[in-house]
Image 1 (spheres, rainbow, N blue to C red):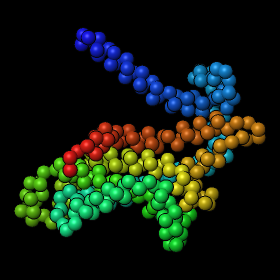
Image 2 (cartoon, one colour):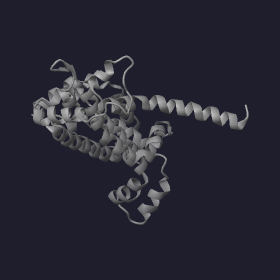
Image 3 (spheres, helix red, strand yellow):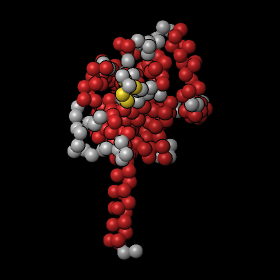
Image 4 (cartoon, rainbow, N blue to C red):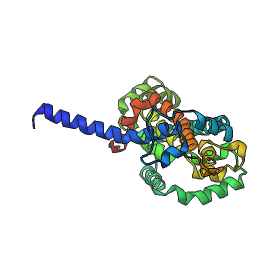
Length: 276
């Protein structure tokens, strides 16, 4: 096949994949601007130029405290991202560049904890959080959501690729461990921190099951919990339209966060394949 024809076929294939990937977002955004009955028409009405209104968004703001939910989600997610990245950076540095007794054993233990499904840990985590009086509190959700094992593994894989000579030269120059970590390791590891921040932000922002277990009061509702109250029928009318509007609103912070760190995303996906 000639080179130009091969490029054309690849371009068409990529455009097709992009269209398939963007279709759910189009349906969500278009549906948020149309009456709920548009989903039950045959064929469904997703014309972006007809029956457009903001009634669904008004319904969401009227039925749900979206601003309070946004604040709760931003606080919980932001704190979880910060703690996860900070703990993972320090743990990854130790496993990547330090020698200590039982290093291989403890790294295997770390990998084993990653293999445990989160559902298996929900009951013991809840018992511990309840015994410490951390249920129905944001701090309880934050501390039980931090996934340091995966973050340490990701940071260790990346930091293992950094040259040891830089650390040795810093030691000769009189730098201590804290200065080596903050002035050499951290600046060079920004790509892995950005990728880890994206993964953690998305997982925590969209977490429904654990937040539903831990948070019971209306004032502590996060975005997933607030949107769950839109599911069902309202006065005999389907609430699919308001659900789509709420989902569109909840997507905005994820989109902004991803755009800020998108250059690290692809690199972060391939970090697991880096030889440590």
